[in-house]
Image (cartoon, rainbow, N blue to C red; front, side):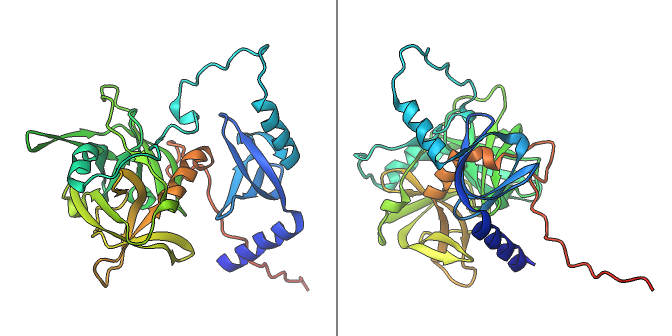
Length: 327
């Protein structure tokens, strides 16, 4: 059935494909190849997956020439136009995560753990637990999709080291902002009105990694919070079921899922999400470039809290119907 769906999408792409930019309500946009335009939805290929966007969420549809012209116009200074007012909701603004300067020095793991540990959290649901990490001070955090899949009752435990002990705080008002099932990523936010500003991490560049570079993970394997494991990058482009992953020798176990994989500059270079169950030192992480793409296009993956199945459902293609002629 899946192969039939893929073949159908390939045929649509061959017949009607055209490059375009879909501007969404809320100032975000998605750029890709339009496979089909229907009365109530637009089907667009963004490279490694296909999105079905409801027309109700589309503000404007621009072809390549129109998008380029708009970009040129936006770069020209216009003194007659008053400056835009800042957006009050940081999620509506692209780039609310931080990246480190290129000149950031390397440090040892002990120093980095003391600095970064408070930004790594434990994510709990009625069915299990995983890890996560804050990407900004307002409580936005990344974890794996499979950690929160099918769940709406989510709690986040935050740990702060004081006098050699971990001071833990549990937050139960957690909202799902966006989900990417196929990329195994989820964006959550703590909405507790009494929550403080949280320690957060910086996102690095997984493309600049080299095989043999030292990395380390912080997470909650088997519920053991703030566990640190160290290793190297074994392979940068390990293909598993059509996806590319970082392979690392850092020990990863159930409960590490959704936690950060750091380089020695203290930057997140991957999100740990699985290991080989039949061996040791064979762990895998989602490259941080996919995380940044997910965050930059988060409105395309937006989650509706009133619908635990997410606002968009991918339906099976219809079966052939055998028509019978009445005698």
